[in-house]
Every structure is written in C-alpha cells, then in structure tokens.
Image (cartoon, helix red, strand yellow):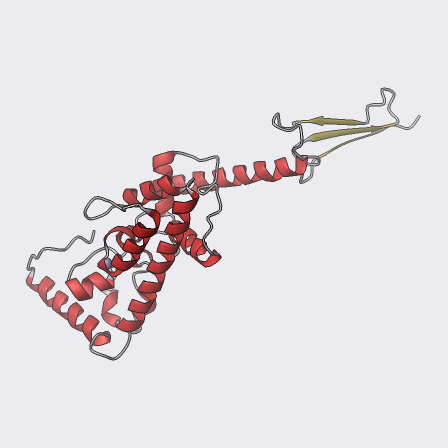
Amino acid sequence: MKYFRRDSKVDTYFFRNVSIEIIYWGRRCKIFNMKGIPATLGGHVLVQQQYVADTFVQRWQARQRAILNAKPTIYQQDYLIYQMLQLTGILTEPIFNIIPAADVGAVRAMVRMIAGVEDYARINAHYSRRHYFPSLDGAHAKRCCLHCFCNRGVRMLDSEWHAVFDCPLHVAARSRFRLASGVTLSSASPSAPVDLVRCICSFHNHKRNLEHFSRFVLNIRSTRRHHFRQLTTNGPSGRAKVAKRIAFRMWRDALQLQFYGSILP
Ligand SMILES: [Zn+2]
C-alpha cells in the first residue's frame, strides 16, 4: 500500500497560515486536515477574502506599532499619524472606513496631508524654494508660513494645522467649507496638532463631512501653490517682498528686539 504525507506552508490561508496534512492512500483515509482557520470564517465568507482582510489588519497594525516606536518629531512626516495614535491607541480599522464622495484628487490631497507628505515647511523647510530665496536656509524663516511672514511679519510654523485653522491665506476656503458642511472649525489659539487630529477623528465615519473636508484640503493646496508662484515672480509682491522681510527680520533678531508674534518653536 502506498503512503504519502506532506505538511506544507505557502502564502494563502489554504497554504500558509493553515497547517496542511495530506495523506494519500493512508489507512485512515484522512485526506485533508486544516488547522488554524479563523473562527469568523463561515457562512458566505470566502477563505480568500478573510485572508486578505486579516493580512490588511496585520500589516496596518505593524505599521502603527512602527510609527509609535519611532516617535517622529514635529519635523517628520508621520507626526500627525503619531499624534492620532497617541489619542486613539492602535486601530484595527482604517482611519477612514468609508469612501468619501469627493473626487479622487481631493481625497488624495487629504490622505497626503494626513500622511505628512504635502508641501509644508515643517517637513521640507522650504528646501525647494531656496533657489529663489537663498536666505530661507537660515533659522529666521526656514520653517515659517511665508504668507504670515511676508504679510503680517509673524513667524508661524508652516504646518497642516496652521493651514486648516489659523492661516489668513485660507479664510475663503475655510468659509466655503463651513457653508457646505455646517461645521465651524475651532481650535486653541494658535492651533495645535491635536486640534487637527480631533477634527479628523470626528469626520472619519461621516461621509458628507469627509467629502467637504477633502475639498477644503484641495483648496488649501491650490491656494498655497498659487501663493508660492506669486512669491517667485520678479514683481513687488514677489521675491523682493520676501527678501525685504527676511532682511528686516535678520536686522531685528540681531538687535534682539522682542515683538509680538514669534511663535515658531
Ligand atoms: Zn500662515
């Protein structure tokens, strides 16, 4: 009598997470024995679907643990997600469990903002603009919101929460968001990362608000790009204005004068 037995582990529920014991021509005729099938499996759920869902949760939680262990600083990309995890603990579900009805560009802009990969000086220190403004590499303005710096003479950290809650450059986008969603954005003054985290957490299961918030973030991005383009022109509202403001700031710092508005950490 022929007897063949194999225990194999490969990359699906059937072939990896489950120990498989195949016996051909065995005396007990035990052909297929599976161990480790999830308890939730049953009914109409396919084993492949369950495997994909479980793999997603496993990888997402591993990513969250990596962010928590890394403890990113305010100048790094995952800082917002780190703040969110500090508030909520390790999540089993995605941050957004629903698909907003906004267009792909708006949703992508929002996701990029939360991941911290958008063009904010808290991360990039205006590195891409130093070609036009060489003085930006100093400590005077390299992480500043250029709108607040040039128009109000105030040094504010150029960050996502400053753009969403505080920056006068986005007053119009903010009021459009308020009119569309009925939500008034409120924060401490000046705003803090936790204000934005609470705002995102309050929207994460609200399809309509998430849709409007995505459009709001896209508006912020468009306004910033337009503003940066304007600052790089040769006109009086362009490079000369930035250079003048930086020179004045350097002179003021050299004299160690204290004025209202130095909030940059
Ligand atoms: Zn600003």
